[in-house]
Length: 74
Image (cartoon, rainbow, N blue to C red; front, side, top):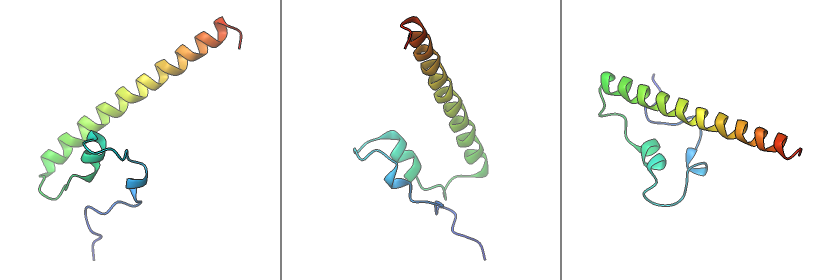
């Protein structure tokens, strides 16, 4: 017997923004059942690219903060 396809291992609602119209919340709640394997692969590729972009932004923020701390000797 297979586990249901769209069941998340944890309840992500507690981590998602509560405001309506939030793109991330809508993305996570989207029904994946109607999507083909090709569409799912494309979705994963786009999400992986977005993760890389977010990680890059985080790293730049950390580096900027470290530079500012060094400049002001925190």
